[in-house]
Image 1 (cartoon, rainbow, N blue to C red):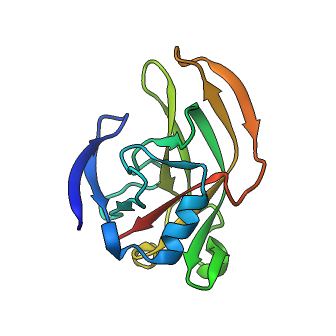
Image 2: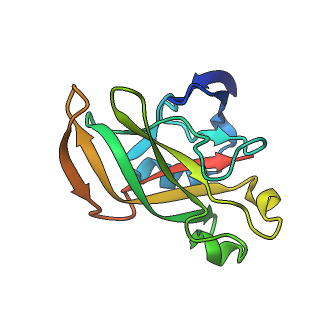
Length: 171
């Protein structure tokens, strides 16, 4: 079953969040399950984000959260990968018009804490249409762990790129 709902981003912009349910390809779900991070409100599902109307170099996703109990602040990304049935391919290898950081993290201040969401760089050579229908994995290089007051208690460096990540689909 597919559920539709609205989410409010920290920026105050409201967008459509689609819970894909059964039609998410197994290879995409498997990679997402291996990641230590997910999107707020995704409840263990791979979220689908509609790229129509999104702006370059600004976030379009809901907030990235840890699957553990850690509160997470700023997250720095370390490359975007397109996940296919054959495996994970760096974004630029998948499509030359993409950059290796075509999809990446963007931090923003909510007034009480820093949160991180996913956005995209400017699409080159009319490649925006090629960005729909993908399963995307964004790996992280480092991130902040926060206490309940929103203060940084730890800066964590990447341990294993295969789990320091988040996965989503595009339409």
